[in-house]
Amino acid sequence: MSTDGTDVDPPDSALAAYPETAYFWGHVASAGELSESCVTVETSDEAAADKLAAIAGGERTGHRVEEREYAHDTSITRREDEYTVQVFGGLAARAAAAFGLPIAGEAGGYRLDALAAHDRQLLRGIVEACGTVCFKSSSGTVGLSFVHEDRALLETVQTLLDDAPVDAPYGDPSEASSGYYFSVEDDAVPELGAWLYEDSGKSGLFAPSRRRKLRRSLEQADDVTASLEVEP
Image: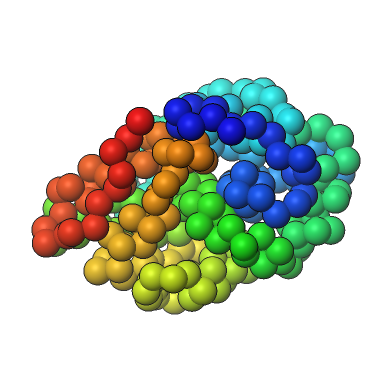
């Protein structure tokens, strides 16, 4: 395993419970798609795309720029890079059976508790895939929302937050233009964010752009003592 925050080594099995696989499947569950012969996952961070490909023995197959609406205000859009990673072969069908992930349009059961021993990395992957972090200048706080088309996935995220070792209260899912969303209470976001990225630089299991954004938001917020480690 590299310790410079840029590379990761593949684990022995993409289906066994490792920190790397928890991070990978968190991304897939939140921003991926399974067919009978392929796992496809997208990320807005180029470095994270290369890490995801390395973890599961896949390859980066595409890059485009997407314009997306904000969940809270659909009149505002943002432009983001989207990098596509694909893993071809039988991994998709095995992952659907192991983790209850939706495959070929079927409903998912999201049995992610199989990866719960690495809950920090699992939640970090989910946050980077379907979470939105922002600094709220009007209140001097940091916001964290989760957005996904499948309400069942968001309910699974809420269960993971309930089990986290830090307090992370949240609101009920509401309808959004792209499905559903819910938000963690602002007062809880700094401690949750600091816990999520603790020791991430040692493992390399993080998206640099997403960690930088959270770190800047925490530095801008009022009366916040939680902070992220210095980036490598």
